[in-house]
Image (cartoon, rainbow, N blue to C red; front, side, top):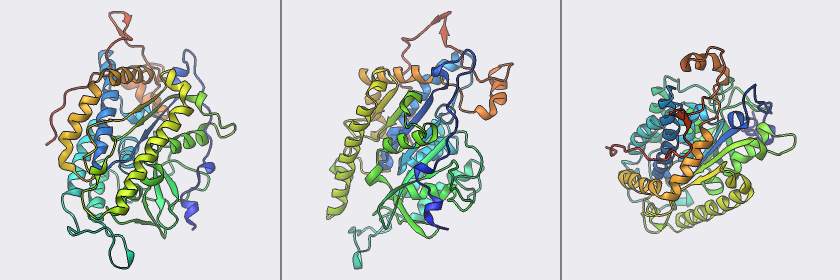
Length: 410
């Protein structure tokens, strides 16, 4: 089978019907919510802490209203990520973890993977121009395998298993030979095959950063992470959403209720620890420049959504520049720096606006509405959101973005 049949281009996506509001519902209930997650090694913890603030804002109000908390997979219709952002997308969207569960698993995984280097005298390129891996690809595979098995899922299970996913997830990766960015999806496309990648293979393909890990072989082709070309995957998320829900006219913006992009902090040259890494330094510079350019272009295209509090970019600007991609021991720095960012007035305002947008979203478990209805006490089997009130009055000024105190990572 050709690789292109395994990883179909975005234009080959099936086109589900546009969400139609039911009686008493509006666009705020049924519009699509999408999430884009940047790559960034251990700094992916910053992404999770930011998302934790947003989801906690939603769930604090739900608890007060007597409703069960929601997970990201119940809020977002589509999650796309690159590199460690792709791994997080799989953990949250496909494995259906809470953010807290994901943080705990992510910290453990990073320690297992980056605790030991394979080659302490690593110089980047070995004999005959071959790129050496600094860390054990087996350790990465073992760590991700543990996460998958902890969810009661077989390592042989396909990423796209023929069932309609509760939350659509895709990850960016690249063909090693051609350097072309492609996507692995957990939802069916017209050319989908039963021979597609497993969950483990998809996770490895998006995290196989050159010089850090070996490439991943899937159906005769080798894949590496898509950081250079799609480290900020907002363009890819936009394209996927368009092909999913607006293929006929390409007008996706009117259908998007909330578009969130979360970064991993601004990288600096401190992200490179070894001397003599000229090529790697140049690559990281390109990634940083490309990420910034992609963000500017994306915000420009979605300017009206930004003005209407339907489009948000969260990214720690200062403090993470010297945290190297593999420095898992710097998690306290990542946490405290992200806390400071989240406690700033501007960020709290944006988190509050983001929560206000997301809190009225209808549960994405549309296929299981009756189960959800039983959980939240609905008698008619419909997943309709409940307006949040305090003492009988709406409370739009509540500080939804107040960042919860967390125990220091151990």
